[in-house]
Amino acid sequence: MGAGRSDPMAQLALLALLVLPGIRAVKVDHMLAQVGFYHQVDQSQQPSGEFMFEFDQDEIFHVDLEKTEAVWRLPDFTKFASYEAQGSLGIMAQLKNNMEVMIQRTNHTQAPNVPPEVSVFTKDSVELGDPNVLICFVDKFFPPALSVTWLRNGQEVTEGDFETDFYPRPDNSFRKFSYLPFIPRQDEVYDCRAHHEGLGEPFVKHWEPQVPTPVPETTETLVCALGLAVGIIGIVAGTILIIKGMKMNAARNPRGPL
Image (cartoon, rainbow, N blue to C red; front, side, top):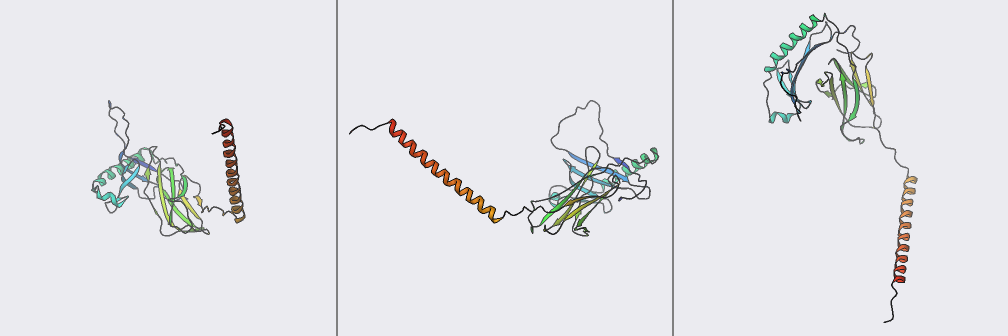
């Protein structure tokens, strides 16, 4: 599945939507979707697949096909719904069969590889010493054969990180998230390294904390002095205008003798 394999073969079977004649297209505000696929990276590997439910392209749960159990994206989801994972096995068996038929019909033709776009950002604003989460977002790639690793100061991180399954996009490409909890430090930098068949070599996205440069004390003093001077000038100018206004008003309305 990683980079460096020669002559990769990728075939993908996706659930298809059935379009019935006479049914009009309607605008929907939200969509609940059942998504499943099987793929095989090359002939030396066993095929693998995924089955999940998503709402507006966000995962609700996926099925662990080896344990035959639903894995909910957030634990609180189990308070509102349940799913019998056994029901997904028949669907996945049909998808696997469809994939094998497609492989034979196309004479093992290699599917085109689309390299990913990779970006790295943090969950919250960065404050040195405050716990945070680095997020590596790998997007718009095909086939769903990808590995992501984290590097801290050039050394591979071996624990603490976790990632999502492959999420399908409307254009039939895929996206994936990888998360790394960390504590930002001035002397630590991070890299997200993505391996994909569409890349000639692993793609590395760099991240390091951006800490604002402290303002020198002399600059702070100068700014304060300027602010104070502007304030004093404003007070003096206001006082002069008030006095002039009072004199002009007195000139317009002279008071006669009592």
